[in-house]
Image (tube, rainbow, N blue to C red; front, side, top):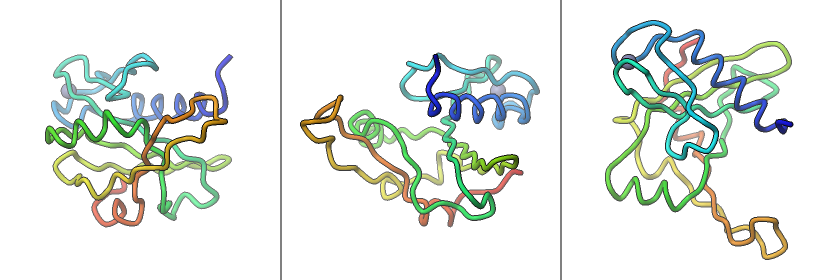
Length: 147
Ligand SMILES: [Zn+2]
């Protein structure tokens, strides 16, 4: 059974896959979902190999860009940034029956947009695990609204 968090993620990825052409090669219907355990990206273009991350967040107002968006594990993200690697990012905001979509290309991303979270406490299921979130206030200055 998929959790609510997984269902929300699936919603965003399905939406991007169905509604958008590949931003790189401009072909239609070439964006595919990567398996859930695939680490660096959520979708791939099966023609040109373009990769992107999709973050989906439940909000009350889809017109208002959130100040924080949960990312994923910090260490791999840090290692990628140290290597100068960034992936294009789609952000899907969803409320009960509406959604908005935003896009940030990799060349507009900076280290400052990725904020390290505190490691999970020793009582947590994944004790010591450390994640990151996106600084939405900073993202908003560079991100483009698509729909
Ligand atoms: Zn493509």
